[in-house]
Image (tube, rainbow, N blue to C red; front, side, top):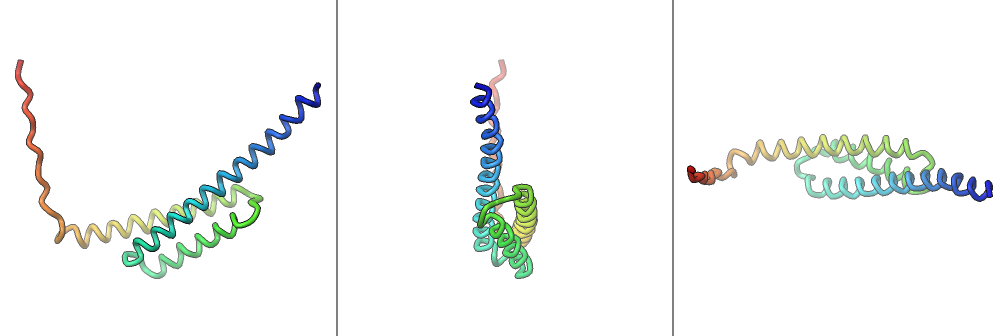
Amino acid sequence: IERMVQEPEQMRDADTKKKEVVQVKNDAETLCYQVEKQLSELKEKMTSTEAEELKKKMQDVRALVGGDVEDPDKVKSKVKDLQELSWKITQQAYQQSSAEGGESTEEPKKEEPKKEEPKK
């Protein structure tokens, strides 16, 4: 009976590790997809150096998750680096586009009339 209790506990640790590896892999692949989409959408708004840097970090992440993931923490670290760079570049691109287009294409905003509440 003790053996029957111990086996599932031992397998639980292995299952937890497998689950973590799968989650890390999925997160990495999702981020790589988002970065590819970002590269195509914002290619005019980012420098070639930034694009190359993003591509290199994305390739590093894909190389890690391409086979069996032995160290999920290493993958998490690479994903975090890629994510931070991606956010930084996206933020710069949107700031640049809002600075360029904000003055000439911005329509005057209409204020909604305020509704007066009836006095009791």
